[in-house]
Length: 205
Image 1 (cartoon, rainbow, N blue to C red):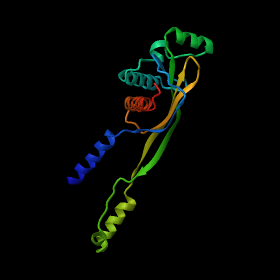
Image 2: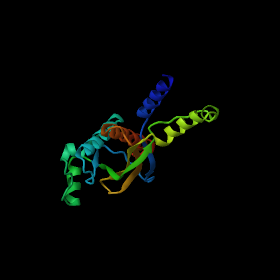
Image 3: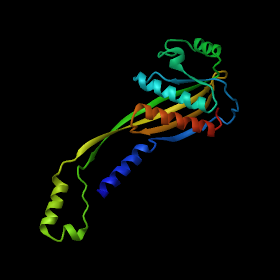
Image 4: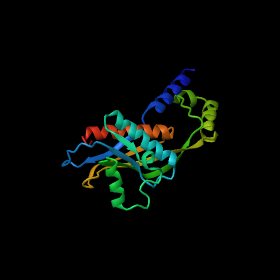
């Protein structure tokens, strides 16, 4: 029973921990501009519209909570944002709506890893299981012959860039990794918080 409680404790800890980490970020140190309205755009390499909506909405909410006005590209312009449009048309549309910066979200890579997990992990003190033949035999037999199972984890590699609309320059860039998130909602929630925190830390807003 004690082992069960220990096991459950570690499961709760794993579920509760953040699965997303910032790998690297950069800011254009010559920029000191403060932005009044930021458009958050998840670019077109997203095949899952649900994922794209969540990534945009969570980051927008986090920026708004930080006192920075932000809007989702899907909510404002629809799911096919900027598709088959010229740069001039896009910039005119953004400026007309009072948007002075664009914050992109790009899924750089998505990797699946498969690993083997033994179905039974049994550790016995040396003196206990090896002192008698049968104890040794049954312990080793279980370790060798009891089948385990394969598990799969998914890693997401992200990049976000902040662009100034007026001069078209890159102001900020960040790369991060999300390891096997429990859900799309959790993934988007963690990502939004990480980027918001780093943008504030780097004074990029």
